[in-house]
Amino acid sequence: MMNKRCLSHAIMILSLMPLTLMAQNTATTNHSAKINKIISATSIGLQMNGTTKEFHDQFSQNPLGLNPSTNDQMMNIFKHNFDQKTLVDDAFQTFQDNYNAQYADSVINWIHSKASQQVLHTKQDYYTLQGIRKRVVNKYELEQNPPSQERTNIIDSLAHRTSAAEAEINANVKMFRAVVKAFSRLSDQRTFSDAQIEGFVNNYRSQMNSQMDQEIQKQLLVMYHSIDNQTLKTYSSFYTTEPGKWLNKTTLNSMQEAFDAATDRFLKSVEKINAEQ
Image (cartoon, rainbow, N blue to C red; front, side):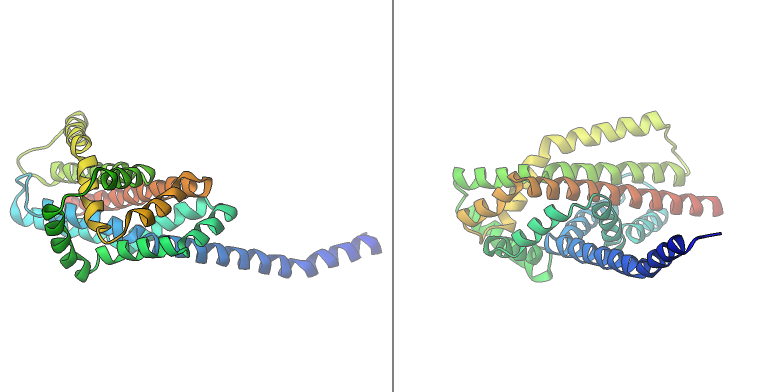
């Protein structure tokens, strides 16, 4: 039989359990709120959506020569499985798996700084309808007044510290591999072996590697055209800190995981359609 001391101890533990669970739930909720803040403020969802939209628009033109109606069906499936909300949900999970409370607090403080607010709001605006219109004006002004070497150096440094080119290449390569696999399954005329597909993917990756740094430089020059050099330097310098490195690595990994999950969903949906035909 349980003696009185053991019984009292057991009762005390049981009485404290609701408080412990409440504290754990509160901490989890707090973590989630901070992750959502980081993802929203740094425009991870908007960036991924911009990448997928550009890819979707390109392959909606049917460059692979699939039957037009089948290509339309394939790209509709693509659009459904690469929607922004689902990509953000997958990115959130990666942040949660790699959560660091100290670093997250530092990132939140950095987000609220004057320089970051200016840069981050400009980045968010870039993906709006008004921002798309501004791109035309900014491109024209850059053509009329090319950026100085100092300006391009600052932009290149920011791109490097945020792994901008790596993120775009990884995303596009994953989507390209998925679309070629889908094409091979849906085409009535041509099918490819895994080795052939990887050959196509390697060629595509090589092309992306050769031009992405320059494309990212052009994009960021347009995106941050209204931001002065010192503000960009202040913003960029955070990525050299340990919290900044955590933010960059976790952001990059979260986008990779999100695109991996999306390509898996896409190919499963294509396989289901193919089985029904």
